Image 1 (cartoon, rainbow, N blue to C red):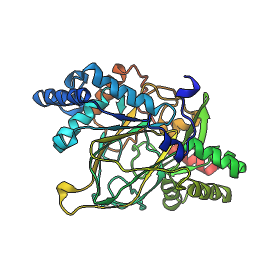
Image 2: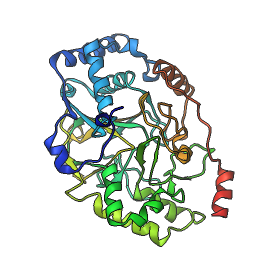
Image 3: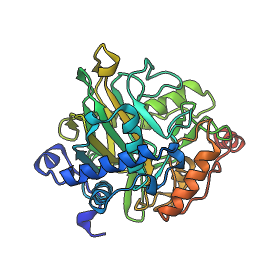
Image 4: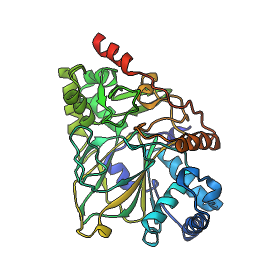
Length: 378
């Protein structure tokens, strides 16, 4: 890649001056999605049995998805696609259409304890900062974080009565700012002595927490992963996890100062029919709390896909403990959960072959017994 097509640091004013990361669907492209949905509904299949042939997109419509995913791997690390005809789709229609789109992008990853491949992002009465808490089923404001896939895609079906504003920032810019203010903390952020809770979403063969640096790089590519909630959850819920050092706390506190600042944090209001796609290694995102409408059919609702993509970057070797594979373009990421089915395993293998992506299949990089030995020796 040339320097112009690799992820770079950006600040809020940079994004406001350049709209190249925004794509507006044309009538022809919209018609392609509509026609594919009509076909899929006439020949219904379970989602995990579907192939591209079951959601046939014309070239112009396929291209917009390819352009969108390419944009997430470029300058801004994000893309916003506007104009999906969600008002013409029922919830079931949108699920089929969205899944069909994913078949052209990459390999979907499971996202929670129930091993679901599409998550409904809406307030289901969940709690956020508790043991096992996740943000997607609450109306809470969220800590800045990255999701557990090469690309996270959110398709907006309905907006909230008030709030729910999306916040995005460049983790490369975050690194650069830390280097300016506290260069002594960079080795701390890049160390592998950070422990994070799986929030009960791990496979039964994995320990309930994992190690991953907050920043790093491989092959000239920067990567970051931070979610203070899950780091603190590991401290709170697992006495055997090594306690955070004073420098680690300083590092977390500094990130919390920089990330929400107006200079670095770009806010966007997702509208009905918007699809937001984020590169999880070079952006962080958050959300403000929201107030919902009273009627169920009017409440805020987005659908989320976690996607492993063919054009993904390499990761540092120690990141494989969480991601499963550090190779560029490999099937990786997601949280295994406790309900993986044979249907999913067949889908994963088939889709990896379609996308020409190496797929090792799941095996814990660190087992429960190995983690016991690790923490006892730290």
